[in-house]
Image 1 (tube, rainbow, N blue to C red):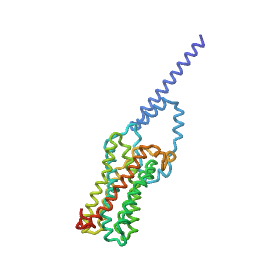
Image 2: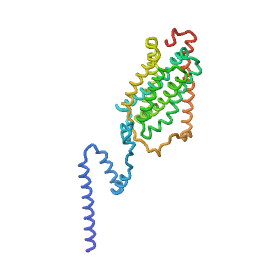
Image 3: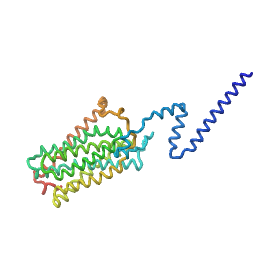
Image 4: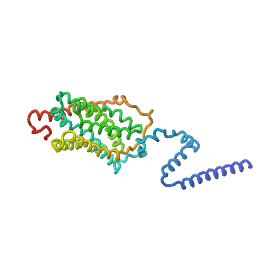
Length: 334
């Protein structure tokens, strides 16, 4: 009888201790400010699923931020929205990312699509050039946009989105303004082909990676609107050339294009906002060739390659052909 009474007393004491602990945790949680409510809910869930000592031990093992991440000015703005269980699929921030991607395509593909007017001018004013070797300029530019994108996506995944985009925008502007002063073929290749192409590649892929994280059902619409920036730029840049070339000359006309790109670049940096947190370097591959084991993806990649292969000869050679056939009154008329 005494042993039974002792065991009942112990069970009541244990229940009282557990109730006091829960009450203490509840009171502490109620004292937390509202802005850390998500953290409070997460802590409560962790305590329900596992012992408190284990949770605290796991939290202590979280690596602190590196010195470079704290001192690097390019990463100070890199404060992505925490990963949500549900993709927003709309909203002001999401559609602003679409606008950002539209401006990126405006600066990159819009400038590439306008290369025909540059080649017409080069043929008439740059010595020792022909349509064949001048075509290498736009080819290098378009090739580097896609090729460098295979590596710039790595910078986006590892938390260096702003570093990649800022460097790419700087190279775009550097290539445009140095093109305005180029008088030799090799200068054009370096400025408009190599420098501009590298800049495009560092900006294009990270920008569209951000857009895809904000949408699910509306993703195709969002990407299409952003990609249409290439068509917008392909209209604006030739109009600038048509209106200004005879008035202020080639050099200042290209500089005006550069100032338009600079205006767009400012808004790109202001609007861009990565949504997902960065991944650890050890969890990201620079190049992952295993994706080509999937036949649908491989066929899609080959189809895109062949489509672009057959498309851009028109942008490069059409104006030169029309000018040679005396269809235009001047090399830049449309």
